[in-house]
Amino acid sequence: MTRMTQGNGLVLGNSFEAMVQRSQKGQVFLRKGRGFSLSELKKAGLDVDAAKKMHLMIDPRRHTIYDFNVDKLSKLAIENRAMLKKPVATERAGSVDEEAEKVEAVEAAE
Image (cartoon, rainbow, N blue to C red):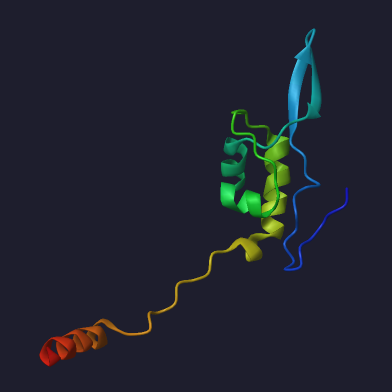
């Protein structure tokens, strides 16, 4: 299984395929699925936006949770944790006191 990466180092998930179980005459078989279920993404700690950034296929119609799919997603999420973190909000440029002074100055000028 080869892994592709983007220029920013984000590991793409197109090499990870969702597997689903089907049964025939009492025997259980695995086959390739259309995509990962929303429940599997949630259990692995990923949201839909992060999955789309990693080019993972999502199947919103499927509601099953398979542990082998969750394990794959968890490993992929751990590899990409640093890339998928949301930027920390920095302190605003001006404080509340400075903004109040600006408003008072504008009102005084009028």
